[in-house]
Every structure is written in C-alpha cells, then in structure tokens.
Length: 276
Length: 251
View 1: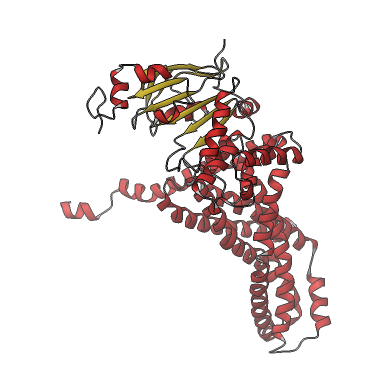
View 2: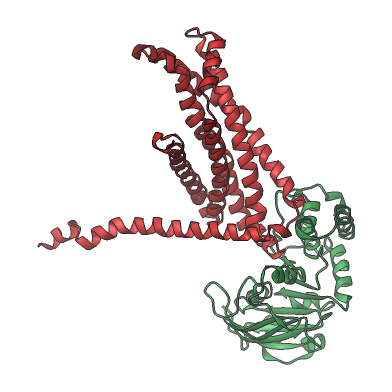
C-alpha cells in the first residue's frame, strides 16, 4: 500500500477509535452523572439536620420564577399550539371520516404529549439556563465554597428547593397549558369553523382518563427532578469564566435530550396496549 | 495543655495545590497567629487543610488533640462550627441580603429560635456599622461593607478559631476602622484564636502573638512578636526588607 493511500484509508484500529472515543466519552459522562446523583441521594441523610426555614424562601422564589412568572408565556404558547392542532384536526379529520375521534385526538396530542413536553421546554429555556448560569457564577465567585465551609451542603441547599419548586411549577403549568390550549384553541378555531361549545368540551371530558392525569403527574415529577439536577451538574463544571457559556449550553441541550427521551419512555409505558 | 489546632509533620503534594512538607506548629486557645511568606510558599495550602477541604498526603491535622481525618457528617459539622473563615473573595451569596447572608448558617441548622437569630444578626450588624444595609444585596454594597458582612457571617456562630485569608486586599483603612476595633476585641478574648494568612504580616503586629513564615513549602521562621522584629533569621530579614537578595529566590 502506498504511503498516501495509507494516510487516507482508515485502518481497523482508527475506525474503532473513531467510533469508540465518543462512546467512551458518553459512558464516562453517564458514570460521572450517576455518581453525582448517588451523592445527592446520599446527602439526603443530612436532611434531618436542616431547618425548613432556611430553604422555604428559596422554594417560594423558585416557584414564583419558574411557575408564576412563566405563566403568561405558557398560556400564549398553549393557545397558539392548541389553535393549530384544533384547526388541523377539524379540517383534516373529516376527509378521512374519523371526525368522531376528534376529542380523543385532542387529548392524545395536547394533554398527553404536547402539554408536558412544551411546558418542560419552556421551563428548561427559562429556568434551567438560569440555574446553570447562577451555579457557575456562584462557583466562580466562591459562594459555593462559602456554603461548604459554613457546613451547608450546596447540593441540598441549592438542589432540593429547586426540585420541589420545579415539580410543583411544572405540574401546575401543564394543567394551565392544557386548559389554555383547549379553551384558546377552541376560540381560535371559531374563526374558521363552528363547533358547539357543549359538544366540544363534553367530548373532551369523555376522552380524558385517569391514566392521562397519572401521566401528567409522573412526567411533571420526573421533569421537576431532572431539570434542576442536570442544570446543577453542568453549572458546577466550568473551571474558568470562559467555560461558563459552554457548560450552560451543554446543560440545556442535555436536559432537552433527556426530557424528550423520557417523555417517549413514559408514554410508551403508560399507553402501549400490551401493558394494559 | 492540648492545642486548639496542631499540624504534625504535614505534607501535601497534590496537583493544583502549593506543596508543603514537614510543616508542624501548634496554636493554643487564645493565641493569635500570622502566617506569611512569598507567593508559592505553601501559604495557600494551610487554610484548606484546616478547613478539611484538602487531605494531607502525610502527617496529620489535629483539632483539640483529635485528628480531623475521617470525621462522620455530624462530627464534621461540629468541627466546622468551631471554625470561621473569611477569604479575600468574600463569597457573599449574591441572591441574599446582608442580613440573610449573615444569618444563613444559623437558619440552616442551628437550634436558635428565629427571634434569637435576628438578635444575634442585628448585634453584629450594629457592631460593624452595616445595620442600615440589612436589606441590601452584595451588588449594592461598597467593598468595605462586603468585607464587614463577610466577617459577620464568619463569626455569627461564635467560632473558637477564625481564619482570615488575604481578606484585607484593596481595603481602605479608614473604612474598615470599625472592623479593626471588633477584631481587636476578638483577638483579646482568651478563649478564641485568630489566624491571619497574609503577605503583609506587619499589619497585624498589634493582634498577633506568633509569626510563622513559610518558604518552598517549609516553615523557615517561627517566633513571637518580638522575634518578628528582632530576629536575624535570613529569610525574615530578606522578607522584612523586601530585598531581592537573600536565601529566597524571587522570580
């Protein structure tokens, strides 16, 4: 084999390295994240020493920022998403002769999937980035060190109030999202076609099941735990100021990916007929 | 009598730390000490060792005669409650007010009632002349106010040992006058000790009983206030005279 040819043709070893190196990185990252989660769980042992008064203010502040402050934005997005789904549903389903399933389809698309997912996306972009940036800045200005020296476990002091606040906020926001999507979507759809309000909401309520409520609770709990966990993890990563944007961006992309994968898994577990 | 803090032949060779080797000293309760030396002398390794943020690779760090290695959660909490720490970055929590920064430690795990915590915090803020800033956040404070708030936070739990590490950098002497009076009172308390880490040991001659100088990770001078002025130790002589000539190679 000529020298030039050897340079351009990957050998077996280099192909393995090409494929293996990223896999190894993912594996190491997963192991490191798992160790971090275990350390958080182990730190729960010291919860009994903590006075609730020290974290109650943080829970309130985070609930206000993540839940209440995000509400107008969530409602606007929900109305627009709901409008699009309703318009598409009401104009296209009759062509296939399945307009009778319109309400079921609404529940399936909006309540089961879009509500939790879009709400989580909004929370990640607003509050996930805020946590990662705040932690990275606090680490840089040695605020985290000050907490540790004072005997305050930063994992508990920072993560626990946010998990509580995020779970509550996401659950509430999903309920608001679904309501606004159905209500606002119906109003928007009136501009293009008419459907009696009683029939619309009557059919919707019939299409809802306890499983949908369970899915909403499970997803909001999972997202409420994971968004602060992943954001804190990446917020603690930067070793210099210049690395802060890199890890904040990584926090957002990894959280988005994890949330979307878990959303699929939960939906599959809850709604696949062979599990019923 | 068992020393409050003791280093026995302590060594650190971890990457990212200033190495030290064979460092031994003892600080009694009520004794105030100044650690000084040139950059890279190992000075910045001492506080992390005392605070338990770093493990020695050799030797032992003892608090009241007991090693601080392998403490369980509750023991470590008790040990941390014996220490106050004030560093040059101050590290005030930016989202909390002056009052919340000071009281956080007591709010977090102390047995104090809320009104007791308020009373302790108010007394400290009054002593340090920052009571009118109680609702201000760190970003709204002057540098000396940040310093005084960080000091109040470091002593709010009334520790027996206070470590002040490079905290006087860029401070106007007049603006921290009230702080110096408070510090003098603490320095005179026979049950409490203060350790200063500094490049300017002469600033603390009114407070300190013991002066310890490090160079290349080893103690090259240790003596009383009088020794600090009178000793002809060549390292100390070079340091006092800020001369580039002497046993220390200065880059």
